[in-house]
Every structure is written in structure tokens, then in C-alpha cells.
Length: 559
Image (tube, rainbow, N blue to C red; front, side, top):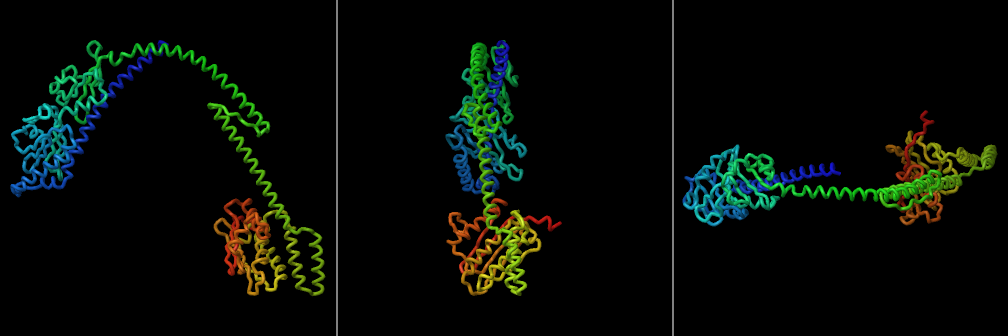
């Protein structure tokens, strides 16, 4: 405990010293920010066209009226744009290089060049410090140049040159009341019991809470302090912070008991707090141990049940990190159950679709054998049309019985369609012509079995009902990228928009709706939702059915 106390005291003392220095740095930054704001203010004349024209003008070309007009224009500009924005500004001058004249205004009256109420000697001397390479000059503290009613006995001069093409046209001179720097210092983090000195580059005091020292040199022993040190038998702490912008320094003197008077209090507080902390830790560990073991045991039991196959386990809500773990395990378990349910439903739906597809097949072998004998008898009796029809029907039965696989080569499906159309044309008065436009590569695509026949059947049943004109069904197969696109187009009577909506409505118990819905579902379940069936139709113009499925080449054909 003593070790902790000593270490805490050491680090606290270090932190206090660092805070003390940070406060100094904060004050200097405030002063630097204020000086930097004067640069923006002093740039305004350079951005004013009228001012720049006056500074460029040859004085020999000016009449007396022009000179008076220029005086008035400049003084109004200085008053409006600069003086009104600076509350602690004693006076502002604009110096013209061409005329070697000062245009000035104070917080009480207008100042003319060579005015008997103002001493320009210091300002004229300061001008020698302004050049293109060094456009800004900041003086140290000095007596005000005002001879009558000065705002303050001491001022700071900020001077900034006005240049054009590296040539000095003039300068702006701002005389500041030193009181502004006292306000900037005391508004910051200087404690009331501290003694501070803001000193200029000449080691003279600009401002202080000891007003008797303003304008006087800082004592030598204080001016030598560069960071912080202890003096007077360690009873006083002296800190110093330098401004790189102005070369001014802030020196603060504080009694050590004000800064480090809390040390004994900290030691006592640490000892008492340490004892209380140990007692509380013992109590807390006991409660935590009891609180952790019970829910942890329950979680372990639930996980064992899940491993044994019981997925109906529910995790009880618990507070804290174990509660988050329980929630995550419950979420994971719910997700697993949902996935199992989805897989079951998908497999059940797929099985039902397969049953529906198989129900559409005519598979009895005796029908096929019987038709073969009838065809043989028709051929003997030279009934060729009957023989051809029976051959087509036999081909259809053979196709249905060929395999239980759900997929087939597109070329075989098209042969099946041809035989089917041959039979269907026997039923209609006006024979329907089939047109085929199939890419060679598309012929060897793998497709789902029986996805074209229901569409062609719908054409026979509905598209040409009672038609006496030339009827055609065109089948076009193309490979677009990695997609096989099959278009079945007829020039029949078309489908109304209302009827078109019903075709994919599962609640409508219609043969066409069931067939098309079955095709769309089979494609979606086998290939995903990016593929399917689309229908475009116009009354009295025909119908276009488009099937999109992935292009899968037949490897046997390629081999």
C-alpha cells in the first residue's frame, strides 16, 4: 500500500507539473492566435482597390482637392474596416511610400501627417524593419505616441508592409493598448494566487497582475528560467513559456503549497481507499463466483443436449457477457432449425414437382407394344398416314419411357415436339406449320425434360381455336452469354392482359395455368430465381413465350 501511495504521489506530482506547463502553453497560444488575427486585419488595405490606387499614384499628379479626398477615403476606410473591429486599438496608420505620409485615426480623433498631437518618431524608426522578406514587425512594450488623452500609457505596435511586385507601397500600423494582453492572460488558466509576467523580446514587462512592474525589465533571476524550476528553498515554482511567433515569454511564480498541497490528502485517501477496495473485492469475488457458476452450468447442460441431438433446447436469458453468449447460442440454434425446416420444405416441394412431371408421362409398355403391331398392320394395308401417326405416337411413348432423369438434350426434346405436333395436326382442320431456327451449339444443351411440350399444347388448345388463316409456331433457340434462350412464337389470337395475369396465379385451377406454373417452378427450383418463363402477348397478333435457363453443354456429344 505504501508502495502504491508513493508511486501515485510521484505520478500525481508529475501530472500536476505537466498541467502547470500546459496552462502556460495555453496562454501563449491565446496570445499568438490574437496576434495572428491582426495579420488578417492588416491585409484588408491590400485587398481594397481604392487604397491600392492611392498608394500607386504619383503625388505630383494630385491636386489639393485630390489629396483631401484621398485623406478622407483612407481615414473612413481605417475607421470602418479596422478601428470598429478592434476594441483595444489605440490608433491605426496607413503609411504611403510615394508621399512619405501617414494617414491615421485614433479612438478619439483623426490624426493627420506631422500631427502635433502624435509622435511619429518611433513609427518611422519601425518602418526600417519592414521588407519583402520580412513583411511583419511586432514591437515590444513602449510609451504611447499619443500626446493628448492616450488610451493607455503603454502600447504594442503591429506593423505589416503592403507590397506589389515585391515593391513596398506602404505599411499598415496598428497600435494596441497593452491592456488587451492582460485580459488574454487572465481569461486563461492563470490561478488568482499566481504572479505572472508577460515580457517582450526586450525583456520588458508587457502586462502583469503586479501593475507596478509594467514597462520595466524583468529581474535577471526570473528572466533566466527557460522551463520550470524551484527557487527560495523550493518554496516557489517558476515556469516560463516562449512564443515562437512574437518571441515573448510568459513567466509565472506560484507557491509550492498551492500546487502540491494535496499530497498528504492523496496519501491518506489512497490508504483508506485501498482498505475499502480490498474488502469490496472479497465481497465482489464471492458474488461473481456464485453468479457465474449457475448460468455457466446451465449453458453447459444445454450444449450437451444439443450435441445429443435435442435441437429444441431454449437458453434462459442471463445478464452480462454470459447472457450475450446465451443469446448468440440461441440465435445460432434458431438459425439451424430454420435452415433444416427450409431444406425439408424445399425437398418436399421438389419431390412434388417431380411427381407432377412424372404424372404427365404415359409409360405403360403394353400401349407401346400394341401401337407397334397396329402400325405394322397399317403398313401392310398401305395406310401410310395412319402408319405415320402411329409412328409419331410410338416415338412419344418411347421418349416418355426412355429415362427417369429430369434432364434431356435439347435436340431430343425438339424431336419429341415434332412428333407431338404431327399428332396434334390430325385434330385440326387447318394444319399448323412448325418453323425451327436452332443454333448448332444450342442443339446440344442440357434442359429440363417436358418444359416445351406444355407451351406448344397451349398453342393448339387456345391460340388457333377456330382459325382459318395460315397458322405457324416458330421455335428459336440461341445461346446468349452463358444463358440458353428458347422463344416459342405463334401468330394466333393472343392473350388478353387479364388472362395473362391468371396464367401464373396458383389459385386459378386452369390447365394452362397449372402447366405454365409447373414449368416456372421447376426452372426456379433447379436453376435459381435468375431464370424462368416470361410471356408477351397482344390480342389478334400472337404470343411470344421466352424460356431462360443456364447454358449447360452435353459432355457426351462433345466427347
